[in-house]
Image (cartoon, rainbow, N blue to C red; front, side, top):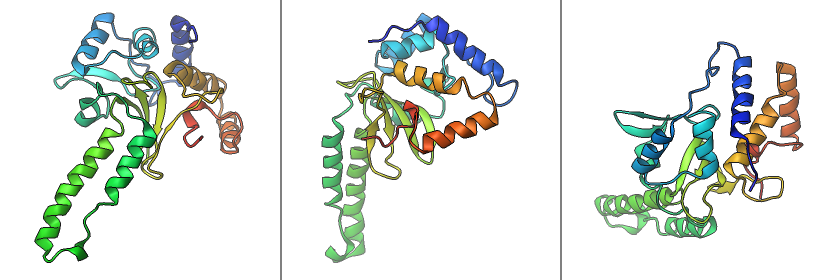
Length: 233
């Protein structure tokens, strides 16, 4: 496991945000205290992977990721739903096994032509829909949705189970798959690998021209940041 100087990462991150000026997204949220992190873990029913924990303590409660905060609802991430937090303690399932179970369930969807009445069909279909929704929710058990990538896509941090500490991409909006975000060794990236890779790619993009050129390289498949390796096999 790589050793990270999180205080140095804080300085790099703060410099990046300072460069953005006073516009939207220019303020880096404050860090959390050890007591706050422990309270959040106790309420959410998990112990955060160490590198994400160190990020919260030394870098920020948010920034590149959704902000972890507390209010009258308790501890939560900005923009999440109660269902996102309900199964954090449940181990993240093997993806291929969970996908196969989901696909098998879809094969059992009631068909209106098999029923003598619309009411009977609707009753069975309602029961099936509940089962299908539960199966889909179960596929992301044990994960925290750290980033909303738009268009129904999310970046997930696994917080429970054998894959704990790794970063995944929820691409079910288009491909029905959850894919690990792979590091340069072809292994699921840790939170630290994911974040430091993003920071290293982001720091040089000081002008619109440099950012445009970088995106052109990435779209061509060259030097693609871990955070964008959404559909790597």
